[in-house]
Amino acid sequence: MCPESEKSIALKHEAFTKKMDMLKLSGDGYQQFKELEKAALSAGLNSVVGTVAFAGSTNTGSKNVQFNVDGGGGYSSNWPEWAYSIAKDALLNRKKLWVLSNGDPFGSNLLCAYIYYLNI
Image 1 (cartoon, helix red, strand yellow):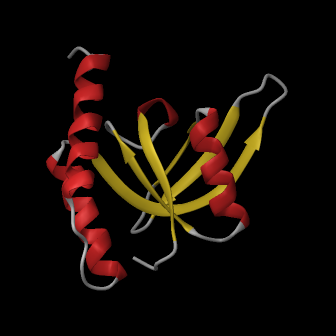
Image 2 (image 1 turned 90 degrees about the vertical axis):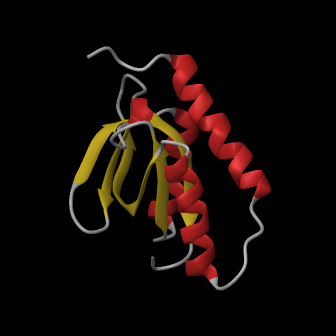
Image 3 (image 1 turned 60 degrees about the horizontal axis):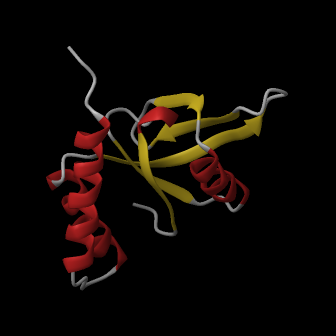
């Protein structure tokens, strides 16, 4: 099976962004999160919440993150700088991380990463 084209991935991200722009969130934080997650899933994105077990750099400049998904499972990979900085902040502040990806939440699949303050 061929990997998805960058154009296809960009279209998914654009669809999610449009859905987010149209949302009028109501209710408590948990209800708001569920509305956001529904928008991500309807755009064809993978949506997972978890914690960062470690975030660090190598001598070659790679940014490594171990992301553990709530409910089991974990993903260790190189993350792009923009996502690594968010993961590092989540780790240092002991916050949850909500990750949207095109497939499993490995660094090369990441589209969005959000620090989340709720226990979801």
